[in-house]
Length: 254
Image 1 (cartoon, rainbow, N blue to C red):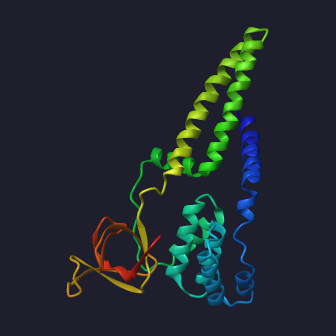
Image 2: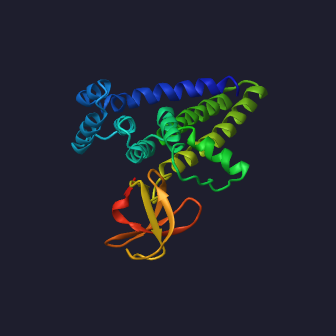
Image 3: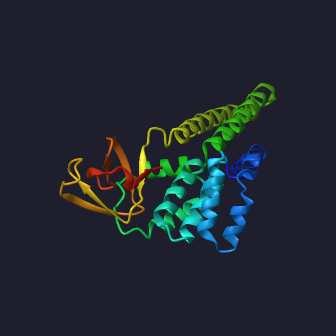
């Protein structure tokens, strides 16, 4: 198994590169890149926004726009676009790093909900590859099963047949897990309505009324859950489980 794993990972990476080469080459905005390299970060952000509005969407473009906003001093917009990039490619290490770095600059500190060791390891394993790569792995494991069936059918000795059976069992387990993880990653953000606080200071009230007394104060860059929306207010959930109403213009949906 120790020898098999590197081969499988190499196969996945090669297949992913072949399937994704076009996607990786998408999203190049020369004018925005030039402005960024010249230190014109606000102009770069504007050009990236224009580029995206023309239908050019990719994790790389969103990530670059997040970088431009960060350099321009807009933490909330940087986090917003890092989050959008993360949803398109949650396995990208650069996106993960910059999003985590930006989040460390937030004024609001909330502890994440506790998870059991098993759930944490299960999620980490699932998140280690993208939906596409888990799907590719399932194909690799299907070939492993086919190879094992051939080994079992054409083996001349008992040891060969046992090897074939073990290969079929192992391949079946691995293909089931890879399909489960592919489905899990596909639905990771499905039905998850979240937003980023865009204003420097936002009052959270107990009712959708401008005259209501603030029950909490939150700051730019914080990620909140969207629960309900009216014409003027949105009912949000905070990371600690509290909730309340904020003005619609104070947040932007991821």
